[in-house]
Image (cartoon, rainbow, N blue to C red; front, side):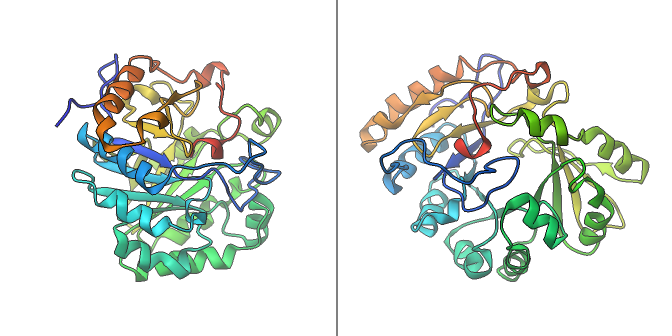
Length: 329
């Protein structure tokens, strides 16, 4: 095995977030309020199955054990099941996750599970169908709920639900969400709204700090769980009276980046060292053949030496990211 990917701050990287498309069919207020618009006039060329195989193999060789397939909406790819199988077939990869808006889950959850998907995250920003429509721009609440049921039926032991907290929209729904997970093995992850280049006004209007929810949880008997080395950034809490769990993702908290263990590759083949930050390191020219793997690994490792100690969001710097769909959230 090649050397473990490591940056100049001795952070090791076990977790790859691999975007396979930046296209999405939802119009979430905090991400793509006007819907998806291609960055170029010509048809975008997203990573092919062979390129996905090569980049995943390089990361696996350097200690990555978990790959999350993201978008946009990754299941919009016609070859999505093949992508899962390709990633899951790489030696060393023992966790293959996806993040989805859930609109195709009811039909395909079993097929994805059979292809090697081990973990599933679904974005559900409200348990009220009207508010769900207001936030996502799509009237698909019941379809998404059916998809979650289908995921459990397919054998997923836990489903993670991502909810972006929005003041004056869904921030009053905490009791409803807690009731929902009392008897279901759902990890409900509240994500603080993050400021990106195009979202200043929305951020100022709707940002809610996750600290207030953490204080509420601790006061009501929830206990922080131990974090594993390929886990995501959530602080996860459990409670003896609840089958479900609560995860808090609070990027504005001091030292949020201290335990960073993940890297991102965009749907066009760029390595992004941070969700917020830089132009990215182009890898695509080294994904043309299997014989380029050493050069690919070297380029990723060299790029890692440029990874900053933090994203500096707390200082109001939002970096180059125009919206979260552009490099897979």
